[in-house]
Length: 80
Ligand SMILES: [Zn+2]
Ligand SMILES: [Zn+2]
Image (cartoon, rainbow, N blue to C red; front, side, top):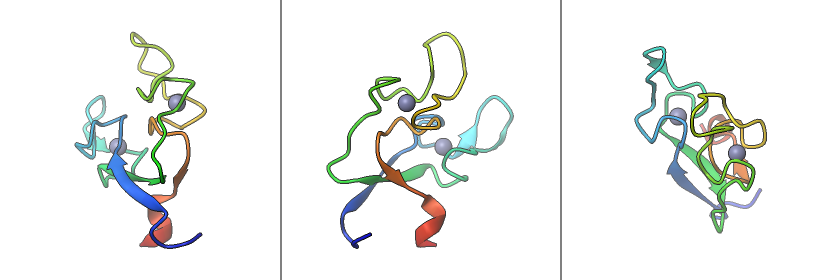
């Protein structure tokens, strides 16, 4: 990966709060960061339309973006 080709965007699963409001634990999608690294230019996940959820009524993480809401992203942990 080339540095600078990604941006930090709010994690859609926790809305940037870094907390999973269902469990009260740190958000597992963004690893408690509140943000995810997204490949520039940021593109919302088409499967969940950027919501990170499979449907508006079911709190189930989208299997395409894994709940982040973004189509292409890097692991937060990969940059330390
Ligand atoms: Zn999160
Ligand atoms: Zn998705």
